[in-house]
Length: 237
Image (cartoon, rainbow, N blue to C red; front, side):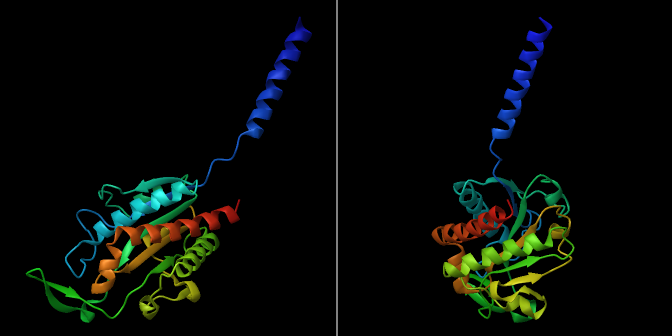
């Protein structure tokens, strides 16, 4: 009886071991952070729209694009109520990658005024284009930069043009793909995983603002970002 029991237990353990080993690895988990909050909605576009609104639209499309590629996603600050920048990456400690979605503005001294639909707004048509930031204080700088470069390469392959605006103050980590160092960005250096801040474009630029509001273009940009992230994460598996 004891021999039969031992044989049965061993058979169960072997079966369980085989099942666990055969279990497919879970797809990578990407945390998509919506930049800014309801109380501090960021820059105001050339036609009076908040940056938060732009960020929400692109972040939502990015999560769908990542899911179509088979990656798992979690949307951080989807309601615009997470005030603490430190809390954003800390809320997703199990994520394999953290990307914070933003839209860019310009310095006050570069702004001009114009009238749009009966209201006065500020604008600057000097700069347009996307850019990215990584932090040397992030524990996964190498992978952060690799993902930034992969995203940048895909963006340019799909016809999106980067900006050189941020080179005035931020050192390039990868000039070709518009990735800059920004060591003290809180959401990046508090992340325990590779992390990147993505600036989709300059909402103070009157023509680019209209492009950034276009849902079809947002979807194309999201596809480019998602493809770059997927390529980067698969390279490390």
